[in-house]
Image 1 (cartoon, one colour):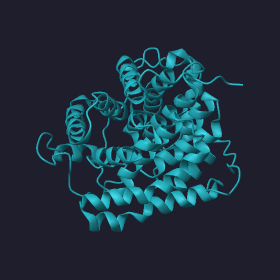
Image 2 (cartoon, helix red, strand yellow):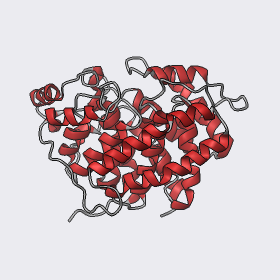
Image 3 (cartoon, one colour):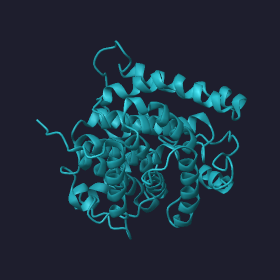
Length: 358
């Protein structure tokens, strides 16, 4: 029976393995933009498999996902709250765009950060973006759940995930992805099994709408675009037996990379699996549930597929680390990881803020 990972070690594993999943799925752009999962797996075999890979920054840099994840984590680690925190996150997102050479930031992240005005009143808000459906907010939000893991902090988690998410992705499909990932991290940190996470997300969505409605920002646009995220998750959870009262999960085997590509593409917008705020956490949850405690299986399903593999990898591997820690991951994958020291330091700070001396 697997021993429970000490919580501070689990926090470190979340951010470090999120970076690992990002660097693996990205492979300097070669695998993020490869649309054929079987080809990725064939190339992995040629490299000697996961055990043979050393994620050195020159060959295996992190992408924009980890740079922005660090911006979120280090912003939260300041201990700021309320408006000062949102201004700090906006400032850090703008600054992070100076570290994007060779990292392929998405168009909504580029546009959104160009519209932020940190330091000005409401300078962390940007206009509604009909195209802001991507996963750029989701991929950087694990740290929010680590900072606010307690059930009593749900209103704060909702506010921070939505406000930080719509700093670049002001569209419900985009910023609700940030809420989903933050919620999954919070639930995992307090011991809720992944089988419950999706149903809890559906329970929280009406509370999220109450928050959005209460802010009064672009209400008509947000209201018209709101249902898609809920409906997509309702369909997915129903198909997997993950709604309350449905019994144990019913996961299809999806044994081959080609089968997984086909299944993931069916959830996607515009055919690119994991590219959007609704389906990046969906692919990650599917992989987490199917992999159990097997790191290689987690990578096969959540990191190495023919979609937006670095983003789903960042989410899936981070969540896996929260549950299982670092011990069973080949050391070469995290020993030389770019920004590993900063990721570990931020994780320890978030644990201290969330749990004190526990």
